Length: 290
Ligand SMILES: NC(=O)c1ccc[n+]([C@@H]2O[C@H](COP(=O)([O-])OP(=O)(O)OC[C@H]3O[C@@H](n4cnc5c(N)ncnc54)[C@H](OP(=O)(O)O)[C@@H]3O)[C@@H](O)[C@H]2O)c1
Image (cartoon, rainbow, N blue to C red; front, side):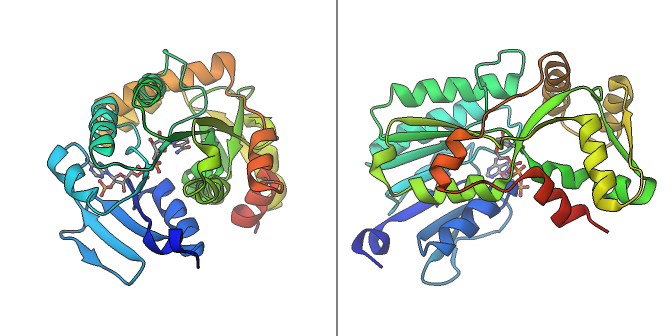
């Protein structure tokens, strides 16, 4: 392993979430030295020679400042639907400058420019702060993960129904988070990427009705599509104590998806991976076949 790998400690925020776990896996597979910023564990601990766990709150400047000690690169994953994403980003960028961080990679989202989706728009504002920061940065903009489909698996398997709060014609690009993580591992210690912004999506763009068809093929029985009325969805989420900001942001996202779709392109992902990404068909076969 070369000197850079031995010396560079990478801070990964949101490390125990859906994205963070995939990114941690990909970084550790490469042999990187990683500090995982997590929320729930109670203290800082060294797991082994290559992994250190830092427990803290991303909304605390003190915790962020302590987490950055000894770090030279940052992979910043803000918690999903966090109302303070811009403030967290601002503090991280300020402290990254103070700490002389070599490379700041921001995990954004496809089409952050869409104001109608508040969680996207917040990411746009963090991207703007990065442009003005003077830091070496790279921005990844993944579309919706294929892994999100796993949340529907229990209903698909038990009731034979794929139900979402937008209509069956809604077309969405997806990407496997493992491919996003592989890209992240390829760029974090590579200065050739400084200043880049990459949209990450798979080539296959399918409607919700087509998705139900793919589930049917994998399960070898009919999986019916059902459109959940958004009022019904809202009621269920309020009952489940989902935070109000998340409910509102998601409802706006569903409305946007239904009106305009959410469409990316697979060219950049393929170029960065150096091979094809995992296809939606392969993902469904892997996780839904019976
Ligand atoms: N899901 C997608 O399809 C998709 C697509 C593109 C981009 N993204 C972006 O990817 C990012 C991560 O999404 P995700 O779905 O991987 O998130 P996630 O699974 O919800 O993980 C978020 C993590 O952040 C931790 N966390 C929450 N509040 C915290 C705080 N105040 N301080 C420190 N840690 C805190 C959570 O820990 P606890 O649970 O212990 O609080 C959790 O481990 C989001 O910014 C999202 O917009 C997601």
